[in-house]
Each structure stands twice: as C-alpha cells, then as structure tokens.
Image 1 (cartoon, helix red, strand yellow):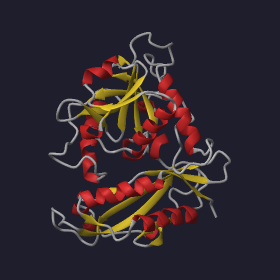
Image 2 (cartoon, helix red, strand yellow):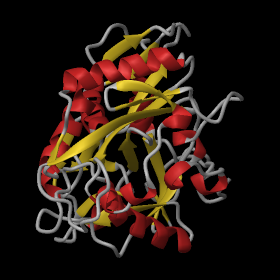
Image 3 (cartoon, rainbow, N blue to C red):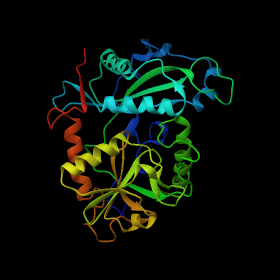
Length: 346
C-alpha cells in the first residue's frame, strides 16, 4: 500500500510472465501448471510435445509476430466469452504483412483454431490466448528473408482478472523514446518491438516506479511499455492519435467506443508531456492490463494534492465508469454483443 496514493501498487504484488503483475497474465488456480493442449500448424498437439530445436529459436524470433486475446468467464459461470476475437486476428494478419511474413492460414482458420483449443482444454475460468507466428525450420540468417513461410501456434493459460479489484500504479516518463515509423513499424505487434518497452520498463523500475510512459521522436506522449495511455482533463478523455507511434490497441478502441456511448467527450490527438502533470486522471489500456489507473506520474499525485479524498486516487470517476462498463461487457452482463464469441466448455 502506498501512503501517498492510498492504493495497492503493482510493485507490491507478485509478478508474472514478462514483468506483468500476476493478476494480468500468470497462471491461476490449483490445477496443472499448463493446459493439456496447444494448437500448432493445423492441429492440436499435447502441450509437452510442442517443441522446436534450439537452433530454430534465435533469429526466427526477431521476425515473429503475435496477438494477446482474452476469454472471460461469463457472469453465469457457464460460458467463456472471447473478447473481440475477429479484430485481434485481423491485427495479427496485418502484423505479419507488415513484417513480410507469409501466414499459412487465413483468419477464418485461425478463428476455428482458437475455439477448438478452448474446447479441448475445457477452461472454466478466465483465459489468455496467444496466437503467434515465426519463420519455420532452422533459421541461421540474422536477417530473415522477406515473405518467409511461418509456423503458427496458439497457446493459452488461465489468469486472474483485475476488473474486480481496486488497484493503481506509479508511472514515470522514460528517457527511452518509443519507436517510430522511421525505425520500425509501431503498428506491428512484433516480438522485437517489445524490446523498446522492455528498456523503458527496466529504467523506471530501477528508479522506484511501476510502469513507463514513452514519448515519441517528437517528444510527445506515445504509449506505455505494452499498453496505450489515456488521460482525463476537464471531463474530456484524451489519448495520443494513432500517428503518435502507438500500436492500434483493441482495448484502446474499446474504451474510446464505450466512452462515447457514455457521453464522455473523446479527443484523439497529439498529447504533450506537460499535460500528464495537469491531468485529472491517467490510465493505461491494454488486453493484459485491461484498464489500469495511474495514481502518480513522476512522483506527483495524479489530479494534484487533495483533488480526491485519500484512498481514491485511483480510479478516478471517469476510469471507474469505464471499468464497470468494460467489466459488464466482457462478462456478458450487458447482453449480446458482436464483440463476444461464446464458447461452451465440453
């Protein structure tokens, strides 16, 4: 618990895969450490048998692309609801195209693969899905050639959603700049792009913060280490435009849509660093992160001292409305939605 913000910080929690808080992405529950099945190259494969040679790992991972998708257990406890599956798979195909990789399956087949995997593993709790594509075979070239043929795998693991809890984090602006169009395609969800955020994350953690906010090459706000960022000022929700060097986030798009439905004014534009310090609220948005409020930026309380009662620094009123609306949506409590794909465990 942080005395300045009155909220539990993610640094006070056990961390899971890839530096994410355990609630965001780690295995949950008391069962096996991994599911029974993984989908690979057109068929279900026992998880323990999904192997590659060590020489197939190194250079192939430079060009690899992936997606992060969540399936939520419905409020009735009887169904899994995969959130925006088609949109995630469309972005997966676009990432492969940007990185000049040839996928052997179209999005329709990959959709079937995801659903087949979920039924086979029989999940009855929230689940994270990761389709990923990497150049097949033994790759010895440092530069994977254009239009390389890929293998595709879909992995899955259970997680504990943070939508039911109150949490916040301490963010800081990193000295590392977000990659831009002149260097790498920021619109691609490629493994190699995440080294950029990793550098920023290590820097701010060593300085006592939780998560970084990166500026782009123009010195304006871009995004977090692996999530988009939004701020609220005078009742308006602001977020950096897609031309600011951000990944076109599915959760970002969801939050903006929900905000408009709630009558919250939305602006997508260039955002200056100084606006972070004047914001009434700041929060991250991402599939793994869901909606994560920021309680302090560069050591300063978000919203200013005394802006809200002690213990209410995160979430603020706008983030609270969005969190509840998002929770009801992904749990199927808001009724049928084209963004939800239902799966009934076998």
